[in-house]
Image 1: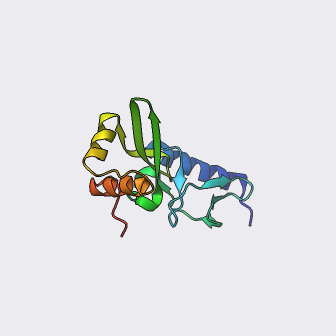
Image 2: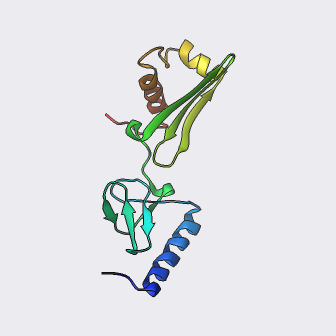
Length: 136
């Protein structure tokens, strides 16, 4: 069932109001908490998980706190500079980050582990600090 141009305009107006209200650039599937895209031909919101997303859609401010499953650890090391960041994969926003002395201190205090367990240790520390919701 195709929507009329008037119905599509009404939907677009409602979406614009929601975006203005929350000052966000994306809406999220209420089931999977991933960004949805508007299909103008069908007049529906498409979730990348493979289904049509039905309102009410969520703005980024309405998403639950990220867990380690939603997080990605990004690093940058160069000579005397160091940066470790935990980023929310759903919104690409920084959840928590450490620079230079903060990275060094986390290693010295035993929160960050060298080698293969490094990423897991960063996520563990982010959970410990409350930046990520507990997952287990």
